[in-house]
Image (cartoon, rainbow over all chains, first blue to last red; front, side, top):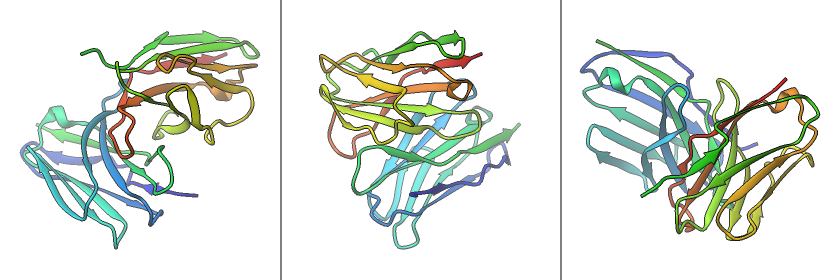
Length: 111
Length: 114
């Protein structure tokens, strides 16, 4: 069973702080890693993808990948109340096209 | 341009009935995926199409579930003899078709089996 694990939260951070969301995966052959944001009652919306070890920054978002530790994270700087949502980590394995999702981490940014 | 569209947005049916869920992918996207999301869970893969053919149907839970994409564009997910446990949000996604390309999700169809 190829697993993607996330802490379900809720993770509560004050407005303006850095939110750190973490994800571990079991399939060492995994190639591609995605972070999706999902507002309540809505469909997943892509935030970032990362393929290589290290950091990738896009605006207030930074994705970090460590394949040796099988760990991927998402940092949200200057968190805003509008960032309050569930964040889904998704992993594409080495032998398929499907995404394997974690259960998601609920983030609450308090004003 | 238009995103992935799905119809109906909501479907209520009775146990034992047959349902069809439709997905219209982003124009030009050759890859299409179906996922199912239950409350409090992440999306769960069902089936993947590359063009007209089902390249991977390993996620279909049983033979009551079937999907087609006859012309390589619109896809229909068909569920026979629905059960209460089939109640979920059925999500469709599409991508340009290359490995590792981002999947873009539609709004989903909320299926409730009474």
